[in-house]
Amino acid sequence: MANWLQHDKDNREDLLETAVHTANQFLDTLPKRPAAIKPSHPAQANLTTNGIGAKAALAQFQSRFGAGMSGSAGPRYFGFVTGGTTPAALLGDWLASVYDQNVAADMDSTAPQVENEAIHFLRQLFGLPETFAGTFVSGATVSNFVGLAQGRQWAARQSGIDIAQSGLYGLPPIPVLTATPHSSSYKSLAMLGMGKQNVTLISTLPGREAIDVAALEAELAALQGQPAIVIASGGTVNTVDFDDLQAIATLQERFDFWLHVDAAFGGFAACSPRFRQLLAGWELADSITVDAHKWLNVPYDSAMTFTRHPNLQVAVFQNTAVYLGPSSDSPSLVHWTPQNSRRFRALPAWMTLLAYGRSGYQTIVEQNCDQARWLGEQIKQSADFRLLAPVYLNVVCFTLAQDGLSMAEIQAYLDRVRDDGRVFMTPTQYKGAPAIRAAISNWQTEMNDMTICWQALQDCL
Image (tube, rainbow, N blue to C red; front, side, top):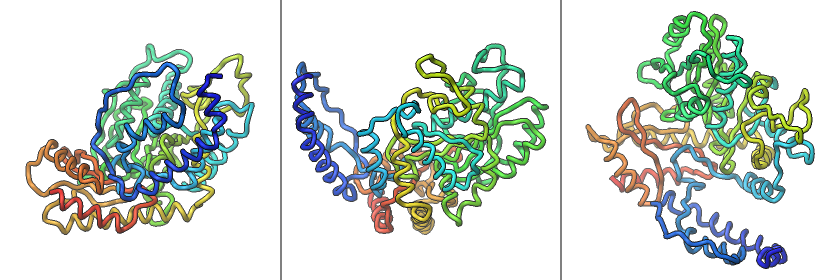
């Protein structure tokens, strides 16, 4: 064993204590740490011949990069729907690295059973029937990929083609209908060989991002029985507007389509009696995307994919190799997702769900939504800002009050907000107009943070 490896092995307890101390220093300063930091680009170091050992490596990281770690896990980071990490999820994530299990295999540990139980907890949290199979993936992009891959497999089978075996060659384009899709759906369609240009954007309801179901019905009728995929929004990115999932699902009685619901963070509306009606009908979907590193508040990267058609999912992702043993009626997780090998990312989810339960997540969701509505009210009453859409859930979509603003001017304002350090938000476009998006999904966010945020927005004008 190399000298430094042996040294670090012999001093493992001291190293772990150093890691705990470093982590506590960061967590203690998180509420006051800049929510975001303008990235710097230090000169790259060269790889040493003999190494310097773990403790010196940590010290060098701290001196060169530590100050550049933003407070994205903190209470005033409102960009990209980034959740924080609950204490139980942090514990689970550290142990996931300690145990270092490859969950895709089911012949050498109980880790797959932990994943199955975490999915069971999530079905109960979301009110989904047990008929939905679920698996963990790295994020909403891969979750959408898995759901749309199943839709592709289903649509091709209607034409007598098994894409997983025969490929796409000779298959006519599969229509994809949607109104306000997340960009990851386009990325997934590109990876699946279905093409971004084969998406038909359906009109939305007036003043909304939600799909016009009547327009969708007309488009489905025009297909004259050709199988299609419908991507419905269980919470749009800009405003968390919801498609009428019940009405869309009802159309399956007359038209042949696969219904995929992208509920990356909107799915957590199901945690609250106040909001769960927004998801009415999602239990009728064929596949569902829900993210975990958003409102579940577990570390990156983590998401779930749910399906009512597990046989189709396995048909797409089945991995055949002699060293994996024969397939069975209960295939191991290696046959469920694009990854053959993946970390024990279910453990942080299992830990935090068991630690805080239904009421814990109901509280997180409802307090974040109340905080978003409070911010929306301040914006509505201000002469300096303009609210662009109702605050449906936990995202506030607004802009500066001046007419004719460009995206560059919005970005310049948000750069000032970022450099101020108190809060972080991202630019967007709403109905073609430059806008600002504040997404609140951290378990630590309190009303005092919202007051600080509002003051920072005004000070940076």
